[in-house]
Image (cartoon, rainbow, N blue to C red; front, side, top):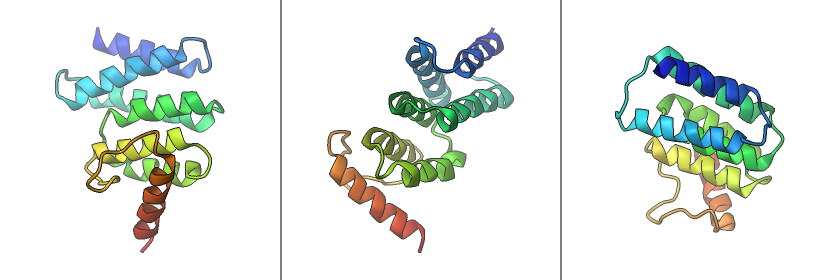
Length: 142
């Protein structure tokens, strides 16, 4: 049952820019959050396949809104192995899209990387997010 569900999600994500893609990405986010909270168990291979489908979607999509939603969904998995990927997204979108930048920062926060200092982050504080991300990247390259 779970493997069929994952295969269906992968197929929906791989179909790309259909009118329901946001709904499908939200399904993935809910699914990843359940995994991260240990509410369900699923084999690692299936999770990897879904994770890779979302990353391919992010890497090959041009809609910034859809990319932001996909980054949000991927971040829900809270996978420490994705740190470099989210850092790369920050580098790529720091000057291009505040929503993708924010979702990438939140994803890093979910894996215990302090992106916002002692304050709570906000999508609506784009300048602060950009400043914090720049400082993070500067410290990362030291």
